[in-house]
Length: 173
Image (spheres, rainbow, N blue to C red):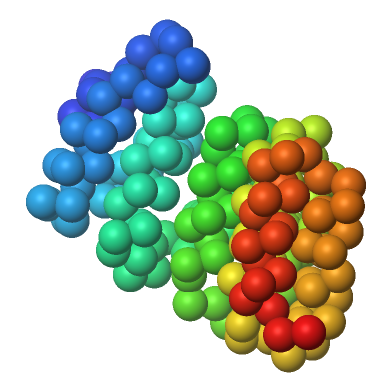
């Protein structure tokens, strides 16, 4: 099966490079009908394509979050199943932008709490941010989620502590 245009642009072998992600972001922002093609790349057999697709999809969705809505089920499934660090942190950012039903909300919260135990500090940081974002719509989450950045300020990595301090400024005491 031939690679899609977006998968071809994202292809490569160096996981340390974002390759031509910015080109794909511009392409999809100018032609939003291509967003499903980008989302499909999140399941590509090549881990570099998956990583770069996650980066591009997260950047596109930061500008046009409603593009994610049609892909909610797939994103929630990937959130629970993804192994790659790069995929997990981008999924955490994207899922927090979704309009979730109560069961979907619980599913995302469960995944984010699991991500707080990830070996990667960036995944933990994005999980913390995702929980803070979901907290806005969930009164039951508010108290417990406030404690998380307080704990992170004391024991997280420098990046996690910095994000936690920003989050605490947004949380009423």
